[in-house]
Length: 358
Image (cartoon, rainbow, N blue to C red; front, side, top):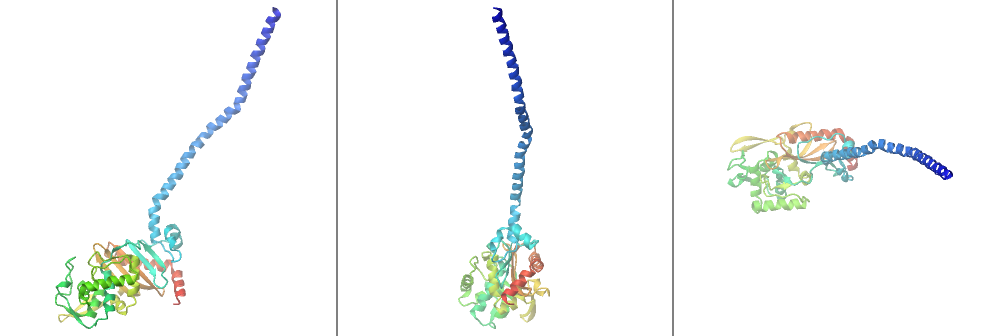
């Protein structure tokens, strides 16, 4: 019995010792696990920081998206070359390579080297907008294409009065001038009654004249251009800056359009009195500019517009500026474009001159 009792005691003691050792062993083995857990616990802020980092990245991306409209606007205004026209979609690259771009008030513009076709500056070049009196460049081309006598005298009648916009004119009813004088005043001073008289005295009358204007536009590839009158008072006369650049290029081939559109002034005899008419584009009087073709335009629907063929570094450059609000914005924009071209693109213009053999 004693032996059994002692055996039971020894067994109990052994079991107790084994349990303590096991517990100690379990505690020892759990120390690295606890340390690992502690490490994981201490690493949790870093893991938690990842979402915040991700949010920071997301925020940065959101910031990039917020800047995208500005980048698009910059892309629309930046300099491109004809072979790299696709670069128009990458505003930052163009801005970095071309330097600071001019801030223009015109909502749409198109500037191109007439010799090479290289687009130098553009925004909303394909936008179809009312063109106001820029119309008169096409009016002049159709008149000259008809080959009618320039010395024939035309009279202002009631049909030439503007009932659409109610604009005035210094050419009163019954005023008789030669076709050449009417053409000069229409181009230089943007005389609406003169432009109307020219269309009315076209073979077949005004309807045939408007049809001839639209046929001429198609022949020149002006697919965004439509004419409904010869003056531009009708806001349905529309075109795009890109089309108008082609129109100016075509008009520059007419010697009388070059002469009349850039003349600073003209005196004509009206009812026995000499009347002075001036150019609506003040830049033609500036010695700093060499302008070969010029035309301004304004109606409320079109804003203030200006198109020119000018010369920079002995290269013909066509400028189209459309839909500016201020009275002087269009000429100020033209000056900004010219200054920017002279500062930023002298090598490009010189290269273009070399390629064209000028």
